Image (cartoon, rainbow, N blue to C red; front, top):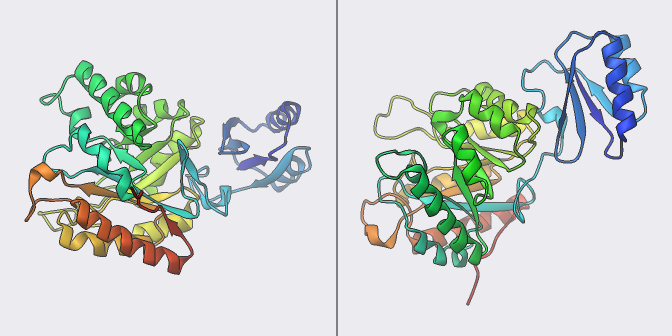
Length: 339
């Protein structure tokens, strides 16, 4: 059972609802969405309980749901949720384009951030290898590197998403990250998810390579139950019979948009790492209902040819195609900054 309070409900209203629920033998926990207070109960409820709770002041609605991911379900917000990363809203009318360094091509150095804003990039994800590979960089150096990324990105008006691999990373990354990223390998790291639920910084939650849609939404539920309503889902491919790369599951995007109010972005970089396929998958992702894209950018230092990721010219071409699709769907795309 979920009890959704009115946006103008007072503390006294909330106290009365909690007292009434407990008097009826219901255990409740209090959480929040982006603009409302909600209460959850995992106990079975009778119709008279629902009617009594609906009649209390400050209650917007009371409903029962058959899914385990109650807070992530579409019933919580039929119109969908927009999650702010700084002044950029992911999940609203505008399509959001994020960038990351292409894997296996060498991490894009922080200096390369200076040209991304001109391409229309609003958010950049710091390379995961710098955050989680102990053979590449230690925690102290990683903190200094993240601070540098944040400083350069802030000067360009770009927000930084930093991957957190464990609970210890959260504390020192908080000063420099506009959002956290949970990698695919940590989708079911429940200790990490619970800790992120205590934060108020947005969380970009990647689907694991073997995770079902239900498991993905249940992982999001761990963060939501903790009190953090700012969760963005990221589809980046699942493991199938193709050993060379992952399979981009765009059908899951449509399913999740039907089942959940949370915004969804798509990262096609691991499924189709080469530029010649990237535009097609980006177009398909937006047509499937994605709220944005996370596109891999190839450093100019890595050369061209078969190097994974997009260079600046290829990225601009994808942007132009997405703008056309966005117009058809009634959604706009951030324009490139002109000089």
